[in-house]
Length: 295
Image (tube, rainbow, N blue to C red; front, top):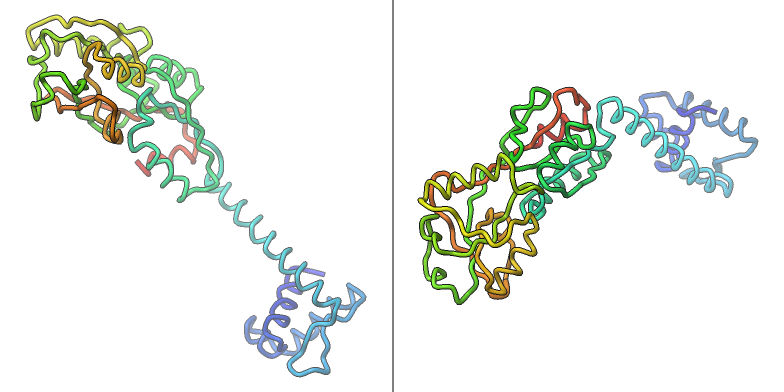
């Protein structure tokens, strides 16, 4: 018994004709008949009732038809998966992302990639930026989406790509006087109590220094009540009217009917947060290569 005999048998069973099966495989009817006879001899049963027109399956043939189709399908799947593995279409990618970025379009990116490459498992990890950087350098992640709070883009062993420049918005409680504005500048926040969203767990990073410089350019030192990388807690405290905050707009774009919260765009050329995709240069896995191409 061989794979061709199974294919010919299924073709005759589906076409209910030796002649049509022969045409399908560009063979003579005699050749098809001989192969089916050899198959029946190997099995020790007759598969077709040749006295009927068109030909029909015997009870044994009906059972074998289902099994043969299943065998052919499994073989086709095995071949496809083997070829996919050779091309890097199976495997996994460990993706780290900064806290709050789950509110962005990251899930859309992952969903589209999964549809294109269903054999590649995407596992996701949510951390603050300094832990993401350390994890990438230690080989815990294949790729991270992060603010550049640790200046990781200048590490010699990594490569990076700008994914987006997120605009910043001011999170206000609804009774705050500034909610009447259609836009704000950092200068307008001089006397406000700030609930500061830091990209890192330490609150004293390269990224934090950048935003502190923006306050200095605006002419003042911010009155920071709290430093946190927990966006949910910051928004809760703003809603409780304990202060205001500046957040990237991906944290707020998908919020609807936010309780006692208003978001006003922050204007200014530097009022953005850059999100980078960062990976190690020595990671040459095919799944990661495909993912980077999808970006």
